[in-house]
Amino acid sequence: MKWPEPLLIIILLPLYFLSCDSKPYPQVLQLADSLANTCPDSAIVLLEQFKDSASQESKEAQMYYQLLTIKARDKAYITHTSDSLILEVLHYYEKRKDKKHLPEAYYYAGRIYRDLGDAPQALEYFFKAIESAKDCTNYRLISRIYSQTGMLYLYQETYDQALEVFRKAYQYNILADDSTGIVYNLRDIGRTFTTLNCADSSLYYYKKALKYAERIHKNHLMGIVQSELSGLYIQLEMYPEAFAAIQYSNKYIKGHNTAPYYAILADYYYHTNQLDSATFYYTQAVSFNDFYQKQGSYKGLGDIARQKGLYKKAMEYFDKYLIYTDSIKEIINTETIRKMQSLYNYQLKEEKNRELQQENERQELWLTILISAIMLSIALIVIHQQYNKRKKQKRQEQQRLLDEYKEKQYHESLQYIEYNKKQLCQLEESLKQAENEKNELKLNLINAQKELLEHTNKQVEAKQKTLQISETALKGSDIYKKFHLVNGDSKLKEEDWNTLSEMIDKIYSRFTARLYTLHPFNEKEIRICLLIKIDLKPSQIAPLIPCAKQTLTSIRKKMYEKTHNQHGSPELWDEFIRNF
Image 1 (cartoon, one colour):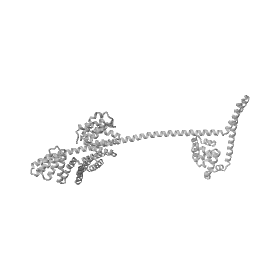
Image 2 (cartoon, rainbow, N blue to C red):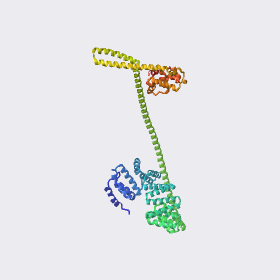
Image 3 (cartoon, rainbow, N blue to C red):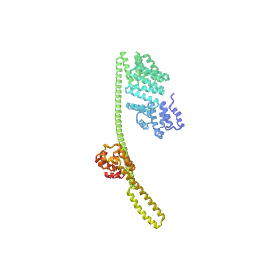
Image 4 (spheres, rainbow, N blue to C red):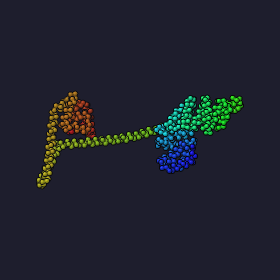
């Protein structure tokens, strides 16, 4: 039972005011959404009443309101005349990547462009709706998307593709358990097989749709299926079945679609040679403002008149038949041109979109290159700064070590002994002065200082004496003599170098280890230093390494620069090593 719209609104509207707030949408919008599927006219009235209040709601609620307005008008079979509203809704949901509402928005965009006669654009939005609905569980919506896509394929005369998507629509309506939708899906599949001239398959699906409609006790649906089935029966010359189907469809859909009913009934009577009845129903059919019905009916009337020998009357009917045939051809040609123009416009739009996409990709590429260049520059600057910082720290560390070694070397040298002796002389004078002053505290302090200096000198002298003895022992050793006597490294073995290194490390307090703290010298450089330490001349060192004399000069010069961080000569390096 269909409720009157005012009464339905009176009953349902208080639910909005009594219910608690529903976020993010007002309850009235949720109510309108549920009404749109069953009573779209009531939903339109409710939405119109809420129009002023909608402008005060959040952006999300406003977009939902606009989507519901489009939905309700579509469900009420009101032809869409503009795409401005849906484009705003699409832009909003696309930007938010709204998985809930975006498939439905794409679907209604397709419906709008279908009404506007732009089939390619409509198909594109249906494809987007299918893509965005991959994770959607609203199977009824997905079924409608496929069903509408199938209708467009029929409109474009691509029947094989239409059949494929109608089958998908049928599968999704089974998942949704939508009995009414299943009947329409089976009807659409049967209709598609008819266009493919597959009468047997078409008959199978029409009968399957009819059985399903009978099972769910939907007489109106049974009437719709029987109406189309009757035409197929006539085509297959199954006239008793055709008449039964015509009578059944007339029982449940009479008054809703009278013109096709008269045309099918006229065809039935014509093919069963009941010419008077056929004439009556053909005459009834031409009274409707439908060019296709008029064309078929005038042809039927002309054929009947010719069979009866009424040639003048037959010529009048055939003239009218030709007039409507020309009119239909003109309509078809206009429709074909419109399709071609729509496709051309779509192709232009796609070409423009491709150009924009390519331009965006180029801009993104240049932006990526620019950002990468900036980041690379920053990275290089940071790396350079870190390199300079580490280099500076290394120089500072080298200088600190050099200063320590120089200070230690001085404190163990003869010069330091001489300096301490001068200090002792000064302390002697200070001691005499303190004795004269009879300052006991000062005497004790000076004596302590004097003892410390004397003790220090004894230690240094002992170290110097030990060093001299060690150096004398070194010069008298076999390894020392071996290195001084050979003219090339052919007679030197690895163990000879190891022996020399160990002996020098023992005498000169970890000589090689201290060199490594200044710089990570390689084996050749360390060996040059060992040979300098045992007083070999450059002319003697070169063949032992082996290397050219000029190369040896360059190596010694670079070793000085690496450790002292300043330019220097090979001789300065030799002097440094001898004193190290």
